[in-house]
Image 1 (cartoon, rainbow, N blue to C red):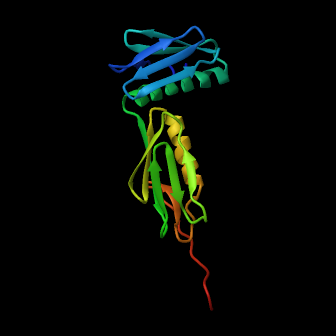
Image 2: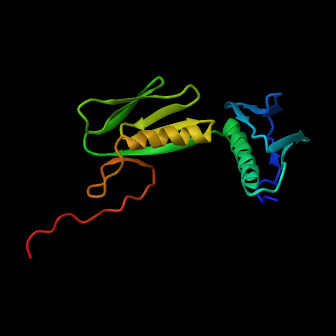
Image 3: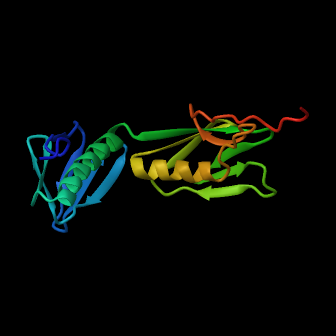
Length: 180
């Protein structure tokens, strides 16, 4: 049996978990609501404040789905109670970010600013012009939006300019060497 999948997911206080007839798990909490559609090979049981994940067979792919489903349910519990956050830094002279409503505007060395529209359950905040925080209940969506913002101008290895995750190490290359 999957080592991750056989562990029950504890439902924190203030969180409501329900299984619909369409095999969809809905998790509601103070930070929002998330839903997960179960694969046909995996089933769940909710009892005594815990969610138990079981599987139909011991095939290799079914074992993988078993552990993945349990991990996704655990991430949903954390997301609706604490939420997830990704911090980004912008390195470059005159480069900055601004947040207005559900839009993030990046000025990162192109002639026009880049505007990224955020999905409904993801928010952004800018502590300063060069730092940006993306937060929300869905771990996958927060990571995808942060990766999309980073991909507009990834850090380059010579000067280190670009959009990077907070604490990300960018290896510096030596420039051209002249003379002999």
